Length: 112
Image 1 (tube, rainbow, N blue to C red):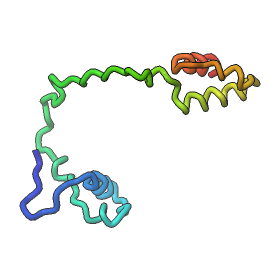
Image 2 (image 1 turned 120 degrees about the vertical axis):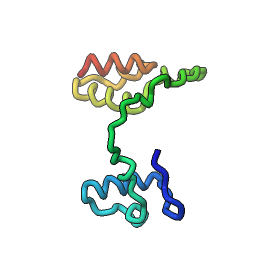
Image 3 (image 1 turned 60 degrees about the vertical axis):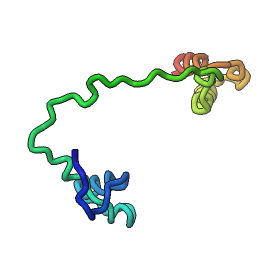
Image 4 (image 1 turned 135 degrees about the vertical axis):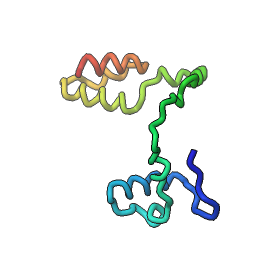
């Protein structure tokens, strides 16, 4: 594990930006990025890792969806379906009856 030295500026999210800027010779995007410490020292291992840092780690199960939000169509799905219907010369009334996410997925797939 890489730790910042006593009295040095601690790493934060801007350190990732500073690292990319330094590695690729890019100008800083902000004064904060210019002042951020580079995490490049942590990326210079003398021996590559051989362990699997994710071994034994599993994602937590998704919480239940009591409101049914996962079933509702996304706004971008609706827009995509409308554009495809317009290209196919269909009327908006044909899309107004699509009540679920799955219905939009099928509709979009049939017109793509």
